[in-house]
Image 1 (cartoon, rainbow, N blue to C red):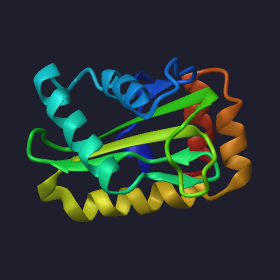
Image 2 (image 1 turned 180 degrees about the horizontal axis):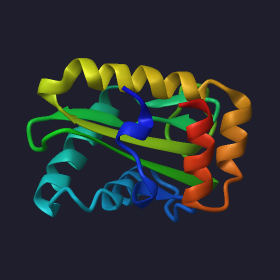
Image 3 (image 1 turned 90 degrees about the vertical axis):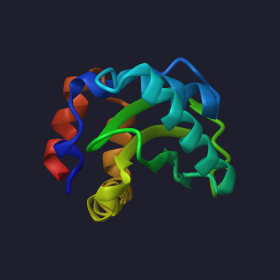
Length: 149
């Protein structure tokens, strides 16, 4: 599974306002308007429970908060870019600038894990991360991802 299978321009924010982990996760969840508010509340709790176990700030300015849940169907993703950086308790102690939220129904575990691995591969490329950080529009983010997806 690839990120463009579940991400479109409506799910991208190139100027996240919040600088806290909780705040940016809330912003990313708000981009998933197709998920009803009641389910987004459940997903937020599950994402934060996952973050309490171990931060999904994987280093090099990247955060990939994620969870599996029974409260939704399918797999959903949102991408956010923070110009200021977010304290995400990353493995390397550095702020996070690129965040990709992934939420999936538990029954889709293999596709979910495949997507997380795919995201990690894309974001391991320093040049791609820099281009994403400097993107000026959701459309530009999509074009960058199309090149590597």
